[in-house]
Amino acid sequence: MIQKGCRFDPGLESSCGGVTEQDTELVSSHRHFVLDGFFELGALRPVLFVPFSIMFTISLLANSLLLYVVASHRSLHSPMCILIAGMACVDLSLPLFFIPNMLLSFLFDWRSISLIGCLLQMHLIHFVGAFQSTLLVWMALDRYFAICTPLGYHDCMTLPRFLEFIIPCLIRNFTLNTLMVGMAGGLVFCGGNVMNHCFCEHMALVKLACGNITVNSLLGLLTLFLVANFIFITISYIVIFVSVLHSGKSGTKALRTCVTHIVVMVVSLMVALIAYLSYRIRNSLPAAIQVFFSTMYLLFPSCFSPIIYGIPTTEIRQHILNMLTCCRRFHALTYS
Image (cartoon, rainbow, N blue to C red; front, side):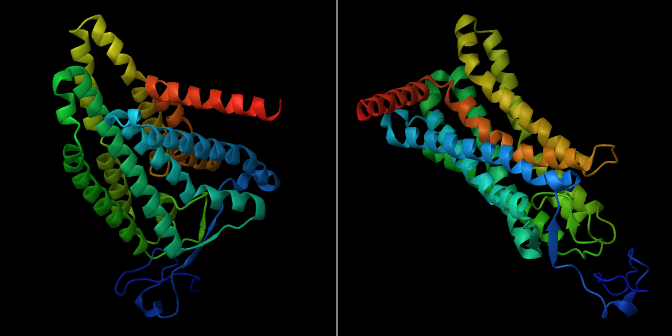
């Protein structure tokens, strides 16, 4: 008996019901999928709309405020503040690729997505997430130049230097993500069309395919390892710490600007690794926990990066406080 929804390459025996090349004309691969994340909650699933909508609102407001403050004050157009604004721009756009659709799914049970839409969403999420990681590397270099070579800081942090660094990284990220998504889109999906996820996560889609998916899994891990730039970030901060230990109190004061960066990166990388590895190794984690980690590694930095990066920066914090003070005075005069 032929299982509906399967298609196979000629000459290859299927792992889905033993269908061979004689059956290839009678079956087809799935072209539409159902995003069924947190299905374990049943009738309580719509309740998730509240916490996720609150986090989404915080992300939009915090990143928009940070972008406005940096863009509207020329005194904040320093390299570090511009990098923080770049992070805010990434954090503002990344949730837009999946959170609205996820919230509609919680409220109205709109869970269907086409294969093309799934691949497009996957590519956008991974590419923008990779760009976020690239900015983190340049932030680490910014701290390195500021602490270890302060006299040459402005020469090292010029726009041409930044472009020389960022353009090759963008080409690398785009190429790796396109290869990963393209290989996923070329698979034959006969293992059902229901993804236990709230958006098109790479392995959640790949696991629905027939045959061996080892290459896809390894390519996904390789892409994460390369675009995360973990080695470069780690080396930069190790050099900074060593330099600070030899510089005394002045270096210790400068090191405080790095601590928040390290905390965000460590937490984000840990959650990302848990999310990626949970789909690649056998484990006893409940499906809802896997979906939660996969969602939070994208949403958590978007919510808290503006606070962790922006508020400790004295110039940004002062301008935000001044703006809030002016708004409070205007509100008091309006209703007095």
